[in-house]
Length: 211
Image (cartoon, rainbow, N blue to C red; front, side, top):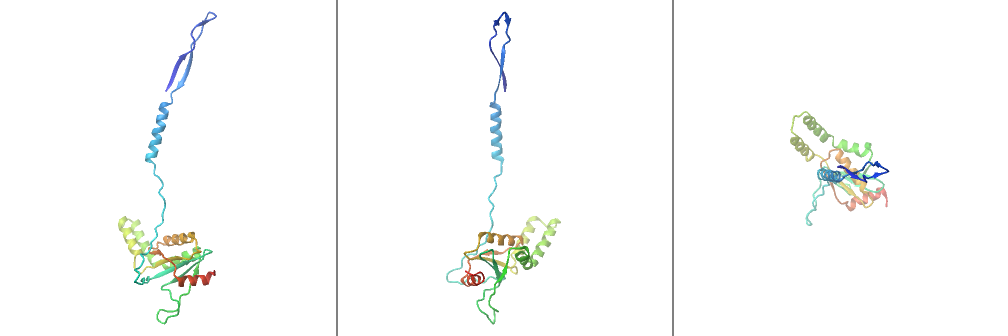
């Protein structure tokens, strides 16, 4: 708070009475206290940003003496260099089989809207339609939030829905993996995993992209 201090002489000079000099001094103590109180308040009430993370599902390793089960309704994405992405559907077949069908041939996609995104939209149209119906009912307050989320999870976990396997060679980039996962999340795909690429799959990719 401001204080007025009296100072200076009050004597006479030349027979005239001299006015007393006055000086002012501002006490900054209350302002400093207030600043520390405000700083403490904001530190205690501030919400610190949480690190963003992405959920990835990794399958459990199979027992050594047991062959890994085939993924039903599986679609495998194979990522390689130069932002190239290939896929095949169903079981990998290295040769023509009279029962299982012809050998596996890779099909190439790219990261444009008219390629990978359109492919996923077409493959998941039935699931998307079911989720859209649930979303419409939820927005009309015809079901509770917990019920809506549970039913959406059940739709995504349906055995008829596709399971997407993401595999990369040693030339693929981390950015491409994130881009594929982003597209899967954009299309509300419920089942996707990252697994190691097989030797036979790597040979197919190498034949496409070269060494």
